[in-house]
Length: 291
Ligand code: C2E
Ligand code: MG
Ligand code: MG
Ligand code: MG
Image (cartoon, rainbow, N blue to C red; front, side):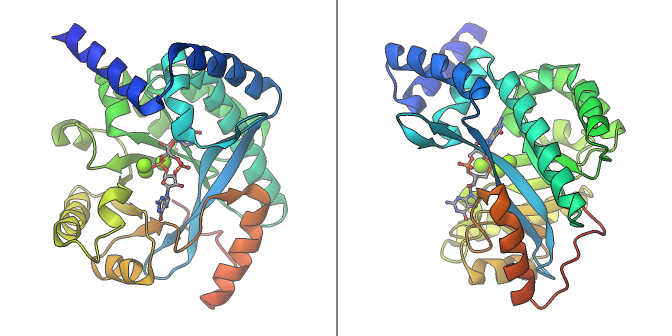
């Protein structure tokens, strides 16, 4: 049974990547270089309170400027990085870069928070919490500087170990969120006992909720369920004013999506922030109540 499941995973990864073996080997070699040669970029996608439309922070999303292939999206290399173990170097890079960016913004008087995505391997790494503490100390930041996102599936690969790592992260005071909620195979009984603050509803349900009644029902049910469990709800994939307004009526807490802002280079974020907060006639002050 276990062997069969493993084989199935392997096939899924291969199809998703659409690469033959030699392409894969080249890409692995390239990825090792990418980390050393500064080809990785941290992009930021803004996250807002859907009721007040006030900015709540941002999600850090990785991009790879490949010397021949150009800009690569995470789906084109993160699965490969997970398979080969290179993901831990990528995570280290992202966490450090995120601290650098937040520290820069704080020097300019903007108290932003960045959410970093963790992978299954990171959740198996008992040393990760101490590594994060060391980074925060190095950049003179507190735990409101970062938050962490993890998918249901990444948690389920080694649920007990993941729970131990997550327990340590939560004890440090880092806000944690379950990502892509609704697409994985975790049990609610398991999720309920994890010390997380938020559920992020997968964009596949949010994107067309104004046109698809089933999707709208799933979103509504997820919001109610999360609130019953005492969790915040973040909707991802908000592509229109209609969807944003509807999420606010359903009591959703936070949201992100192309309608609000696409992932952007870190230096563009302050420009976005000024424009967005100006449009919504709110002072630029995201210093209080970060989550
Ligand atoms: P995610 O964590 O669920 O991030 C949200 C993804 O949805 C991002 O894709 C974002 O660009 C996209 N998105 C947000 N709003 C909209 C919208 O309104 N419409 C549409 N069509 N898409 C929207 P991206 O940047 O391509 O990242 C894909 C996934 O790759 C992420 O999904 C995350 O699971 C993973 N990822 C990204 N950066 C990292 C990283 O540094 N480490 C790890 N382990 N995974 C990462
Ligand atoms: Mg995420
Ligand atoms: Mg997500
Ligand atoms: Mg996603």
